[in-house]
Image (cartoon, rainbow, N blue to C red):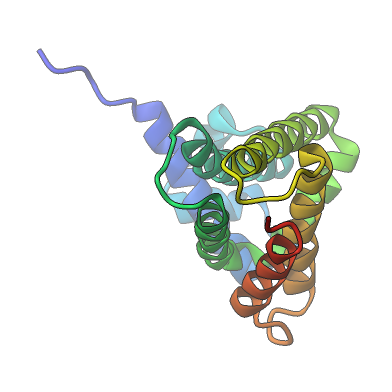
Length: 200
């Protein structure tokens, strides 16, 4: 007998997709829980069974996005891939570009992610743990490049912080002015310049 599908997870994803559509149409401040329930084809009471507030929905979207990003990085770290580490980091960068295209749908609430972290200690803790793990995995990837003789001997942890700041900083500029910044070309050029500086 095959296992029953997880209807709860399916319903949560349905609600998150509905929330993305409504936030994009109405903006975060103007959106009501009624609007999200209507878009998802649920009663307001049914919606509250899954998410108690807009903040809870934003938190769930944040965790989904960041968890996916972390998975991409960990796929590179746990596998001894044949490509040079420089190319692995560039592949990872291109994955981030793809993720940013998905995030484009969330423009109206992009800044709410960090605003929510300022008022919700659980979300702040999640983000803190995410960045610690992300930087740690990047450092391991850089250490692999040093061990292979691709990179000069550098402080891998410091470089991981710099690379993370580069990703986040350009993402912030893109969110502020998506039409004034060619995200994909800018991030590729910036990462290539940084890696050229540590090449052995």
